[in-house]
Length: 115
Image (tube, rainbow, N blue to C red):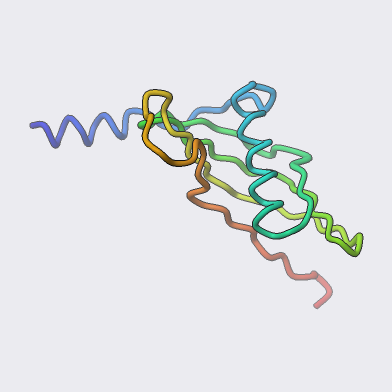
């Protein structure tokens, strides 16, 4: 019975749309840009949210599809579509570790139509 309750409660919280201007989303966006900058040694800016959702778990999952402009040291600019899930630890979790964690970040590769 306990397992059944745990399973049903985890399925009871589907992701719901969230306004990209929500202060929590703005904070996650800023953290994600900084994380990308450090990871790839370039400058990244989320310029548009195609889809933004938040899911209540033990904390929050932010599920985003977003257009990111990446600028490299030689001034090369790429526009990339990121499909990402970012986990935010709950406020009551005071253990050591980062507040946010990227649990999925997919960047589909689109081939030129002429090829």
